Length: 329
Image (cartoon, rainbow, N blue to C red; front, side, top):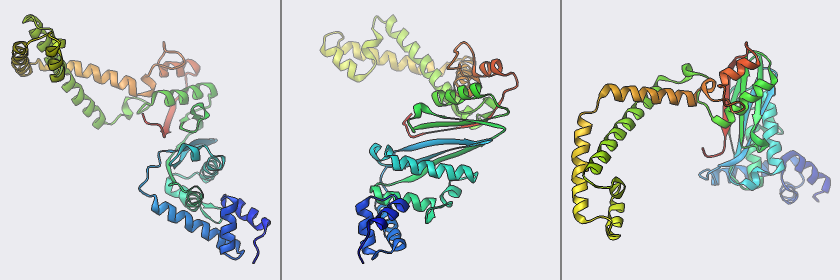
């Protein structure tokens, strides 16, 4: 059976595949559109299986809101070239449109939605067959509330944020979702930071403080002995500095003994209360950096985000936020 241009055009609209791929599929299917679609889908499944271990680190991230519901989704692929393709972006948008229209709560719900002659997951598999790249959905997040705001950073489809608020305040809400994109907070306020994270930060702060106190003592001891601490900060530097004639082998032996003895003595006699107080101060600084409302406002650094929101609307509250990016941070 001869394949007509009309059939090729119809299959291309249904599948998004290229003209030649559609012609080959229709020829193999003897003009049967449904069979041709299945051929294209199987090709996608084969490619997906073959490339399952590949890294899909590029892609398209989009956000959308509909009243009190907002969502983010990412369709990932292997190359920037495919990620910027208009059909790829359009597929991502179509998937997000369907997810928001159905108010899906999970990524599995999104994948199971009907799309074309199959499901959303089928559509992703079909696109994989067309491009020859691994593709997968990721980053599906939602927020709900009386008012929602979304932000696509620089409209580059790489970083999106969404947030829910207790009431409408367009400009203030927009500033907040921009803040979330720029400063990547962990939580709205301290209550949203888990005890596990706080305990981990305290432990890290204590060890860092101890190491700093020991290092200060070592440097002071070296200076007292007439040795420049910068000349002995690593084995590599010691060898290099000796080759330059700045220090001698005897200096290295003397410095190593001073460093070892001083470090042991200082570590055994560190003031525990002082260490804990410094660590608590570091935890407070950490919480200021990672809690949204405590952060310096990017639009007005003289204010915190909490103060900026209050200045815009005393009753405005943020209820939830989500952020997703494909960029390494």
